[in-house]
Amino acid sequence: MSLQQHIEIALANYIEKYAATSPAYEAICYSVLGGGKRIRPVIIYTIAEAYGVANYKLDQAACALELIHCYSLIHDDLPAMDNDDMRRGKPSCHIKFGEATAILAGDAILTLAFKVLAEPQQNYPAETQLAMISCLAEAAGARGIIAGQIRDIAAEGKQLRQDALEQIHREKTASLFQAAITIGSLATQKKPNLSNLGELLGLAFQLQDDLLETYSTSTKLGKPVNSDQKNQKATHAGIIGIAAATQILAETYNRAKEIIETELPKTDSMLAILNTLTARSN
Image (cartoon, rainbow, N blue to C red):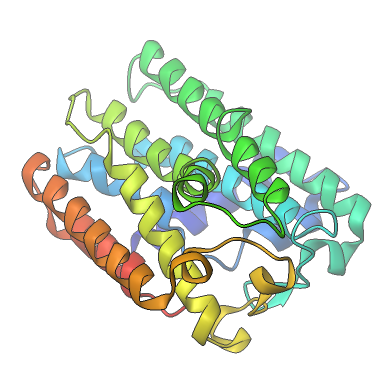
């Protein structure tokens, strides 16, 4: 069974356990299950596996992180945000269920993430579990993806410097990647020096996303193309051009690769993730 299949089953089990009787159940299932690359939870599993920690011991943390990501996508697609009608090849949650239900389903998924992560367990010490909860709250909160989203909206239609754009990407995109690295590291009970890896992975993901917006199709992406242009969003491709953005992507890849090869005892799986982030077509 692949890690993606493993996380799908775990997500479905937690949703059934904690949300089956909720009137938001259908919208929650629609937005969480049956789609998505599951890159962030796979990173958690991969970091832990590099140190011999079994997958099942990370299910709570992996599911919690993916739930945060899924909630953020629902809200990101809303008319007040990016106003996107498609997500993962199907109508966005607010198109399918209405804007009010989409907002509330997103709220439900956000809080479900912390319910899952706080569930009693015996796989690692309580202080480690608390550290994971704190890490996820920081990444999802006022200084994490919320900060990035606010800056992103405020920057619409403006000419940004590259460093200002990278600040948005560090908060809006890289926060959850860094949370995956930190949570995976916490589970190992080791202290690998991976503090910058999540930021590099997040930047690589966003750079590739910006480039795909310029030459891919909505069929391949599973969401509208030219959405950034429509919303007057600042992107690397728009600010510095496709060639320079491609060069920065290559440099980011090399920096992340060096950390992986230097700090992790087993590198193949994490290098495969890095390659996926920088060479993906959707």
